[in-house]
Length: 141
Image (cartoon, rainbow, N blue to C red):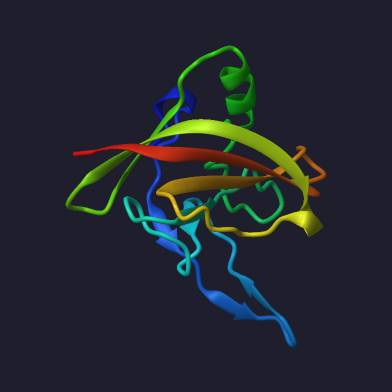
């Protein structure tokens, strides 16, 4: 849940697809997708979560439609928070940074700290770059 940009979605684990010589993760449809080999909410390490900005052709939703607003919010000094849950506990993350990288340069990395990375395709109608919004764990309830 990201209240400041109206995101309220479940999180699904993404399956690995065999692409005939290479592997890729399935695309999350109408939800946030988690890369299962990365940290879960509240765990040490980096958790990677993906969602669509929009999907007009495939109809796979727009769970991260407003994710691109976060860089401007950070520049204006606004605090942006993400709340996740594992069913037993809630975890509060503060967004600390954002960056855009070309699709081919997008790699998953682990900071060793309890962090999360939210990823979506940009810009609209082209989708050849990835917006990565990152945050650090600041509370557990």
